[in-house]
Length: 416
Ligand code: ATP
Ligand code: MG
Image (tube, rainbow, N blue to C red; front, top):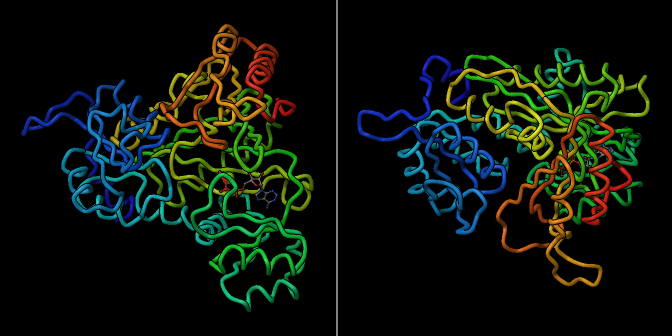
């Protein structure tokens, strides 16, 4: 079922409403991670009941939802129960089986649709989509080649040698820099492809990045679109570390282009819900016009967490509005903000012993907003929470963010 099928059929699900059978307006989410948790918080604040389908008994979202259906994502009985409980359903991570969304869509409005989630799950299809709307969006992706066979691999040594040095990325299931290997020569490329199991991949040319940014867009069933200004992101070891969200975080001409491109990408695909589009800002402006589209996430995004504390409407509220068929208010950012990701590493001291982070000192700093996701076990690289710093101006926000990062011994300090 594509998104357009529902445009006529989507009757708004109003918060607090009770249907003829006495069932209270309930929104469902497939997946129980932190994005699901913050979605659940937003839905409940509006007055909805919530249901989470997630196999893990201690999941961040399952712990705070009215209903927690504890089955695998593709379990027919679990999916049937979710569809029975909820008037509209969304997902919180893109590696959820697209087939599960397809099944749910036969019973209930599902946003985003299985079709668009399926595109975002596969870098080959995703890049084809970006290429198809390049005329509209005015932005292309990095030069790349699809590698599915030995012949494809061998072609890189000949015609396509200019893609090296590059990054070999698996077409499916990559996140936080996983499923990626950087390669300089065709020999390294062959070894990397073997290391990735010879699965379908894309080889992307390594670009000289000067910055990275992302844009959050929300699009309704009726095609209405609102968006946030681009946020500038800093990654450490392939994982988002710092998000800068304030005016002047990047040149305004690039910011405007990125925002327009993200809106075109959402429209072109008939997207419903919150979409995050990631971009690279590249050194050689003459070749790529300074901006290259990297990938899209069919859901709220880590780089948009600052919207909870720095905007009048958050990315999670917009997800609720979009899926439930409510109007989409244009969000307004009321404070400059910096978001610091808190990985499990923060819970270990220099000798590898578990320690409780010094929250007392961090929370004594002005404008600090701590969000922990309720995960019991801290592990290196695991996203445990985030800290958003808001303040009256960029200088004070930057000063506090540096102090907080220093107290928590966060990597990426020099990037603030
Ligand atoms: P995410 O956690 O965003 O889903 P991911 O694992 O899907 O990450 P990408 O966003 O493709 O991976 O890449 C991770 C990071 O690697 C990028 O944010 C960027 O810093 C770097 N990178 C990826 N592709 C390129 C490229 N073609 N040229 C230069 N740097 C790149
Ligand atoms: Mg990425």
